[in-house]
Amino acid sequence: MIIVDVEASGLHQESYPIEIAWQDSEQPESFDSFLIVPADDWTYWDEYAESEIHHISREQLFDSGITVNEACERLNSALINQVIYSDAVEYDQRWLMKLFDETEIKPTFSFGSVIDLLPKGGDLKYNKLLESAPVKHRALDDARQIAAWVHHILET
Image 1 (cartoon, one colour):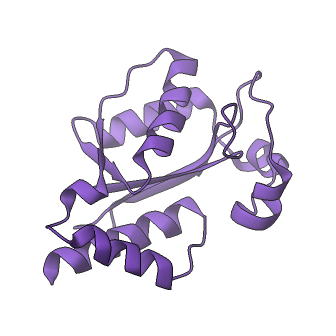
Image 2 (image 1 turned 135 degrees about the vertical axis):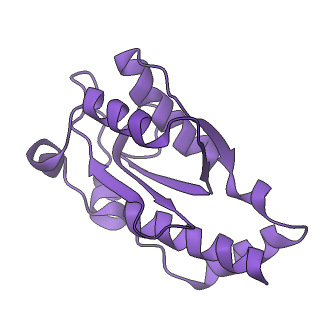
């Protein structure tokens, strides 16, 4: 299964994706991660999110990020016909769709919730893991952690 995580400029309605990563839970060598240069009209920035959560500066995005178009093309190429799973699908899907809407490119993948992958009671186990482990709030670290937790729950 493909686990995706998105870091954003904040949690406000005007926020936008700044970092995207995905990890294949069955193939550890199959992953990707990148920063995104904001589109011209993406100006909302939450200083608290930068200093206390993801630690990514807006300048970093312009220095090391890829364009919105490149991000969409990269995601579509790597994830064609896949279901990508998120532990916060309502946020991650919204931010990914904001990315795709900006370019008018259609995603070649669909979205799902990791909770839907878990057996009965798995959501409680997942929430315990989430409460007991620090979340790094960097997209690739988080995608890998989520993939490991889901794999662990499915194996027990």
